[in-house]
Length: 77
Image (tube, rainbow, N blue to C red):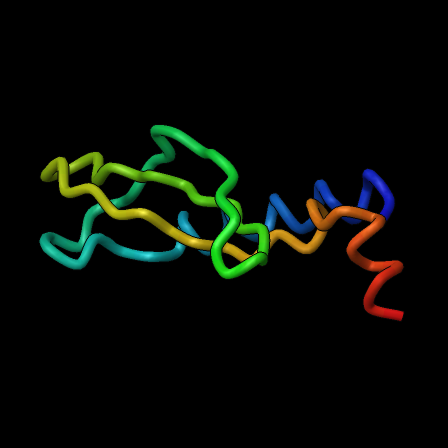
């Protein structure tokens, strides 16, 4: 993936967050923290968000194929 592809991928994550209403009050989420986690050997971009209206917290999990180790991809071929 090129840097441009990675940026578009991350931008699409924030579009999903911005278009997801709070499950408690319907308010808008804003990103508090992002970090990377490896779950079952798959990299994920985790984004902890807070509702700007009621303070409800939600963590969004996005697959992060742009973080896969190049060596791992070689082993798959």
